[in-house]
Length: 247
Figure 1 (cartoon, helix red, strand yellow):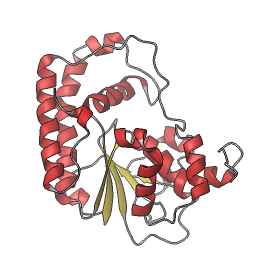
Figure 2: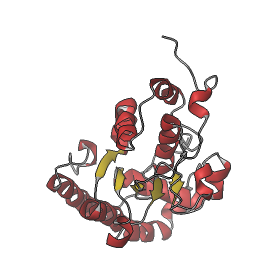
Figure 3: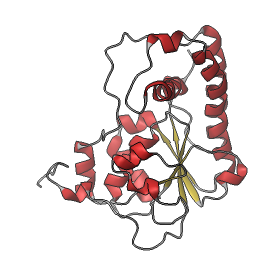
């Protein structure tokens, strides 16, 4: 069988809006920094349909995420990115993909984005400023409450762990495509595998890897990890990946 790459195979790069308005309203929900943009790239290339967003990000639109400009309730996109939580916000959706990432990694990714955009890195000065502890203080609890709310109020949920997706891309992608109700196209999946990073993966930094988390921060975050793990298991989902677990 001939294998295609995205550069020569338009079957993976071509995307469009849904031909008829979707009757099922699906969220792609995550805490900021959990890889939502990357997962949208994967879904769009695997299904051939644009994803939407509760927000509008011009940078993303210019990079080819054409669903950014569509009203989030238009019904023309395959799923809608959201970082929102709370009963009212969640119950608007018929079903949801809940994307979860290790809070340590997600917090650092979102702080990098806040300080230096989608592809840049915060400087040592940023990490050592009072901005960082303030950020962790407000965002760490949000990481937990976001998952807890979706687990409590989400009607039909597919939980995807960012780390599992990195490890087992095609298996997890097939799960998502099937959950979205789209027939699997093996050629598109092969193509996605050859172009899995898209335009929004940070290039590895040459900076020395520092641990910006104080012992107090770690105690707090580890408590949230245990709480979310317990909530997942209570709803019969697999708990958080082993690597999150406090040692």
